[in-house]
Length: 341
Image (cartoon, rainbow, N blue to C red):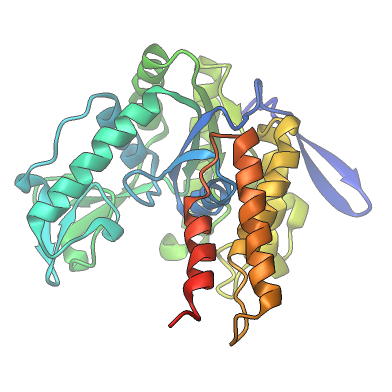
């Protein structure tokens, strides 16, 4: 894969994965949509906390490129979900295309929720300036009964499904029309692709490597067809730069907090415009202050602290009216009311 967005450099017994900045990096004026594996959640939630305009995983966490392509096709040409798209299991209704966080004991509530989300995300995509896609595995699950691709098995019995690894040519042929349609609908969109550093050992270590290899080849083929696609090397940063289990969580498969922080810093340096860094720091400071828990008693000192934070929010919003600190203001006002009779 000819990737111009990263290269390697040895320095002090480390293999540094250097990245080239995204063309037209992101500012607070841009909308960002992120779709993909749980690693996407780490980056997306940080962006949301910093008050960027973000739509994070509109269908919930998803791992394979075929399911992600199906979600994007639906966002490009939204058709409402119907009762036939749902399945009932363990006292809940589920959608085969959605994560279980959407599941509901009432099918009507579920349909209303997913259809309203589809409408909103479809509109958001039309104005998205950066679309971040994180692929976790080339393996996908299908219903044995009708060969339907599913994004989530919703804890149904394993013998309801079969799994297979997507073929390289299959992925390329699936995605070329999707990217073409994205660019036709929104000529200003920039598409960033990355491979999740999470290890998927359901297929064993060798199966995981074969799956990841397919993803790399797939992205490389797409970049030959669409040279303006941007590749962010999150997988390579973990495998070659960090290269140490201390950057992983206790399961030794998912990135730990320190590793996530490092990749987050690399992502911001690569994809965000440096002009936003000062405001990001101010926003982060306000958010942390608002979520600081007072002691058992609301002292006069803490009341003054709360008042200072509310003044900071007012001042920042006056200069940047696009920021939304509604949640933080509610938290601060709630603290002032907490010791009132």
